[in-house]
Image (cartoon, rainbow, N blue to C red; front, side, top):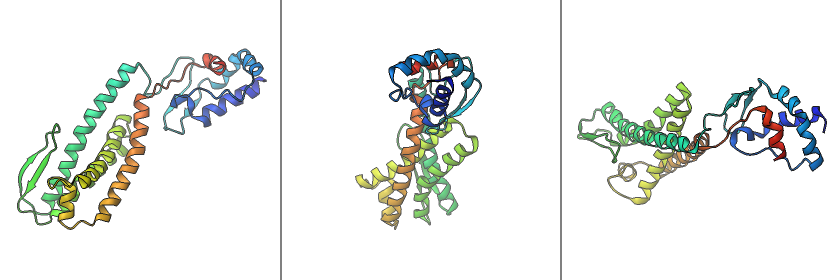
Length: 245
């Protein structure tokens, strides 16, 4: 394998195979043992080809720049640190989700002319709010799941940070899962039975659940990979060694 072929092969993997970021090894099955052995001779050529280049993972969207120093995507690091970060993000996501969801009820209830008689926003149990009178209870009820998704997503799009993307994805998935679970449980104190009681069409609830759970799952899975994934981009001196492993 000549240097030009090896460099093109490595660049093709970096730009199109996405595996440097998402934690998988290089695909080496297409190289026979003789070719693998000869790749060691071209380490310096690979170094020059990859040095100071910008890369984008097409699977998770992470961007980084190669250098002679070891560089890591945001999710890399000791497993204990990644697990701690994941746990902190989960707690923060739960607090944001429950608070914003209930604030959605309160905002819509006030907007419709209701009088708030009691409310509790503490996140370590299910928050609640009561309006008496409530001229438009259906609007008040829909305010929680709709604003509970809309507000975090808008903030995530505005500030574009990984931690806010994690929280927003969690809020989308959790709101959909909550409405679906409440529908299945039939508990009259939960949102879905109240929505049905006040005239919400089951199809509208089903569409909401499908959209939020579907998009929320995809986004939250991607964010979990970014946080928990052991992916790291090693310095380019080790690239040819990785190919032979």
